[in-house]
Length: 63
Image (cartoon, rainbow, N blue to C red; front, top):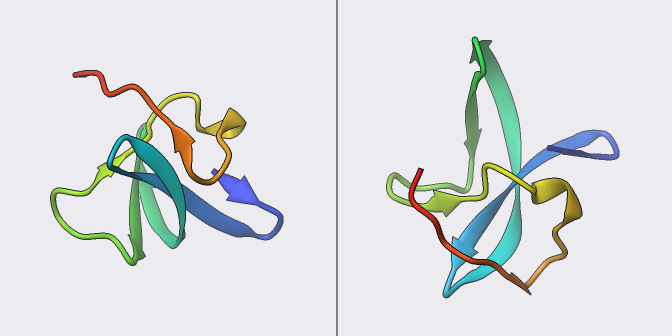
């Protein structure tokens, strides 16, 4: 997702979404490789993030 001139993802913590700035390093099909303040195992929003507000409650689903 982009916000102005920067890219970001929403990380989920305690069922709330928080924006994390990232750099997009490349794409392979529908997947994107990003770097930023993310760790292996962090949950991120993959659908509906264009309507999220920082700190908004989110419902977790298995994909």
